[in-house]
Length: 135
Length: 135
DNA sequence: GAATCTGAGTCTTAATTTTGAACTTAGATA
DNA sequence: TATCTAAGTTCAAAATTAAGACTCAGATTC
Image 1 (spheres, rainbow over the protein chains, first blue to last red):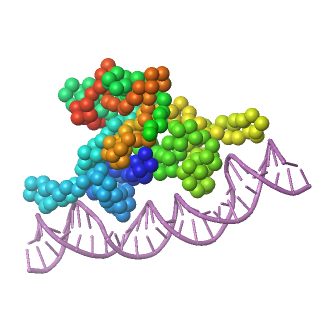
Image 2 (image 1 turned 45 degrees about the vertical axis):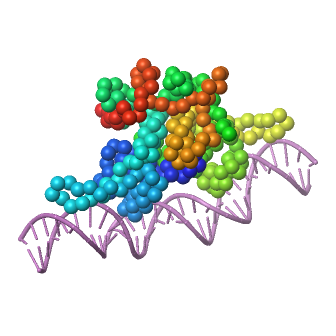
Image 3 (image 1 turned 135 degrees about the vertical axis):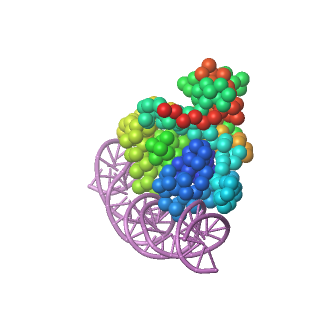
């Protein structure tokens, strides 16, 4: 987890990834949303690309020049659970109200949430869980 | 989530919370484990106390003077899901191997993991989930 | 075809934060 | 009384971040 902390332990990095999950993928759009300094944004985007969490894809809209988009890689998308858990926590313990983002079933639209489950997929209350060091 | 990012978006804060989840609760033990500078550690601990994530409890071991322990509050313990999700991600996408920490059922010892579930508690594949903005 | 616009940066300087090391303090112990 | 220790403060030096001006290359406009 130390490495995960090294990657995510930065204000801008977390916010950039949130943007990526929202589907914002262009440098200037992120800069506009986050009000991040250019040099820091460039730096963090490069770091995330180097770590394999984002990738830089050229793309072209009809009748426009080629641009670069930053999109989540497979590994990046894997952070979705962490993000949803964090949003759920914020909702419960920080903002007190509903988080502005949550997950829903793509087909039925039913709301989804993050939970602890056992090996069979049956949900387990957090209170029953113990942290366990593993070899 | 912006506020959550503000709280967690810092290398030391994430590592301090990891210590807290491991049960390390004394200033000098954390300093030793993390090799964090004293002033920074003091600063982050105070911030976490001010945010209601840790609380400072005086405690006394037999035949010893009173000391201060930093323990997770209810809100702090609520971050467990986020941490487990992050550890799970690190295991799958960063370290490649088993994470050094995971959750287990306190009674049966069965390994537990973080997953996405629907309103009835039935697990749902991440691929089925769509991020959803809420009013 | 010269001038302009735009997205995506780089560069520079100033402000802020972090670090490391030394110093402080209060209670317990020798 | 002198010493030890956990838990801090304080301070100067080093590193990082911020703000804003500048660059550059491909479209577009005049």
